[in-house]
Image (cartoon, rainbow, N blue to C red):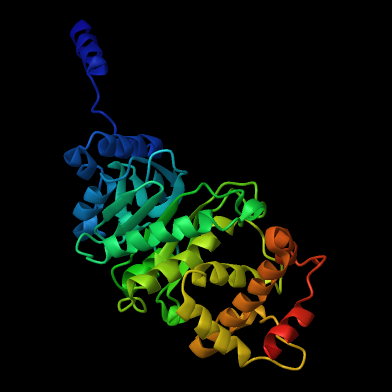
Length: 367
């Protein structure tokens, strides 16, 4: 009897097999640590299944280019807080899926673009970083156009920092990041769209990468991260000057995107961006002057409606931008140093004392 009890005691004290870890925090902590330590073997060991396995190697290489990344979870969704440069604000992205089983613990089952949500460029394509803060270009390693886009972005930043945007740019951190998706599919992933069919006339767009905790930016005092995404389907043949004009226009939006735009005031934001963009190009000023003149009536120029800047009618959009550029140019010419104050009021849908667009544009049309 004593022998039986002794055997039972030995059995009870024997070490049980370690249970699999079923803690998402453990998983994401190990994932973050593996990237920080540049330990690809430890990184790969945290995956289960073959979903997106074919792109995992270049995602790993891309992660090594980031100065900081912290993984987390939102339910079964893998998230990442990341930044592209030191001392820049974090961007939060949905980048994969995790699963926790009873017998096999937690693991990453997918890392890459997620259906219906914007993806970070490092999860979309192999990545090369050109330039350094405050102007950075993110493109594919074999994209020979990256140096040209960097030069255009540097010129754009110089143009807007000297444009006297004042309080309109109070929340901008001064950084300019340009993303070069390698093809239409990559751009669609960046936007979280099934295709870029709605962007056939778009040269580039300003994309808010991480809004604040609310669903949209509602105050010019909050921080934000906005990148310029260049459309590879419409910009392949642009000259260096055209690239500079395009990025200067978008850079104005990057600098001012935290300032809410009132309904009906898109012509103010687009006109300001366009007037700063074409300022250094007499040929573009002449072309837009001619386009705007064609819309003159006895009452002068009518500010374009918000909808005139969208859609797929390139000719109509061109006229809307040209007309807005002339109208904002008239404000800047007539009011000089106080023009930005007036523009800020119009931007918010308010009356701006001293602004008489009808009289000014009638005189301009008759000139």
